[in-house]
Length: 299
Ligand code: G1P
Image (tube, rainbow, N blue to C red; front, top):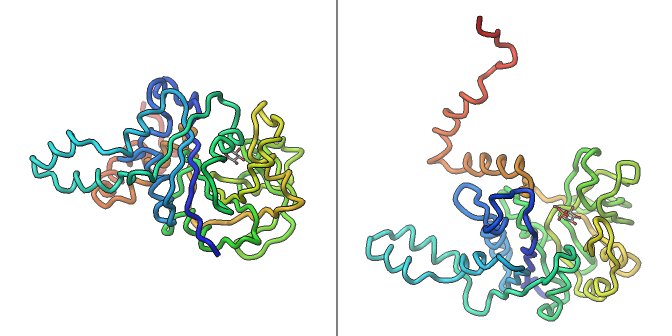
C-alpha cells in the first residue's frame, strides 16, 4: 500500500472566539506553553511520515508562512551568542524548500470548501487532514496511530471520541453500524445535529485520512450546517461508494478553538515538562485549595 505523504492544514478561519487576541494574529499561532498550535500540528504530521504540507490560508495569515521559514538574522545572532539549543529548535521547525505549499481560500465558505481549494495539489489516492485547533496529547501522535491502522478498505477515516450528548451539536456525529476494536464502521454521519437528531455521541475530531475522490463530491456540495460547505456532508454523500471508518485514537484531545480548551491544554502540556511541572503544581494549589468548597467563610 502506498504511504500517505500529503497533509492539508486548513488555516483560513477567522478565530472570532479569541478576539481581540486574534485580530492581527492567526488563531493557529496561539501559543500552548511555548509553541503555536500550527507547529504542534505540523510536528504531528511529520511524526506520521508526512512529506508535503499544504496550508489553506487567507488574508492576515502570513505569520504562519514566516513561522516555518528560515530567519537568517535571528539564527545568526543566536549562533554568535552561543545559544545552541535555541538555534537547534529553530532549525528543527523549518520546512524544507518545496515541502510547504500555501494557497488561499478567498472567502470563508466552510471546511469542505477549504479542502477543495487544495484539489489540484493532491495526487495520491489518500491524504491526511489536520485541524490545528484540535490538539491531542498522546504517547503516540494521533495521526501516526491512524496512518498505521489505515487500509484502503477503510475508505475515509476520521479520528473519533465520545462526547456528552448535550455537546453533539458542536461536532460531526457518526451513526455506528459496527464496532471492530479501535475502528467503528459508520452508516451515516451528520454535521452538528440537534440533540434529538444525534444518532450517537461518537464525534469526529480534527484528524482525517480522506479518499482522493472526496474532491469530486466537494465540487457539487451545497452549503449545509451554518450555511457553509461542510466536509462531513461530502463524506456522507460518498458513503454508498466509499465507507467511513471512525478511529478511536489513544490520547486526550483539547478543543483549542475555545478558551476553556486552550487554557486546559496549556496546563496539561506544561505539566508534561519536568522543568515546569514541580513549580506549577505547587503554585496552582493557591488557586484550587483542597476542600475549598467546605471552607467556612471568614468572619
Ligand atoms: C469541524 C468539523 C466537525 C468536527 C470538528 C472537530 O467543525 O466540521 O465535523 O467534529 O471540526 O473539531 P468546526 O469545529 O470547525 O465547527
